[in-house]
Image (cartoon, rainbow, N blue to C red; front, side):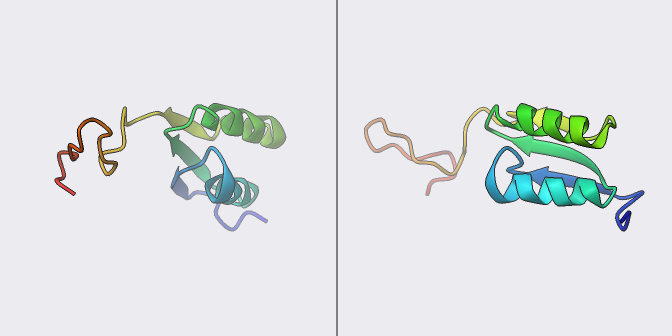
Length: 84
């Protein structure tokens, strides 16, 4: 089952839940991946996939963003730079 062999996937939210599930399935189908998430658990997901599949992929990009720009600030009702 190597339907995605030679393909590269950028998987966001890969630490837990749906993102982790997608990463697992893509890995089983032979895709190379870059896992991205704000949560540090993405490191464990990458480690599990490497050990299970016995290969170097997936690559890891943890905490690429320091904060979520879409969240409102809790200080004095200030809004994010997006103004929402």
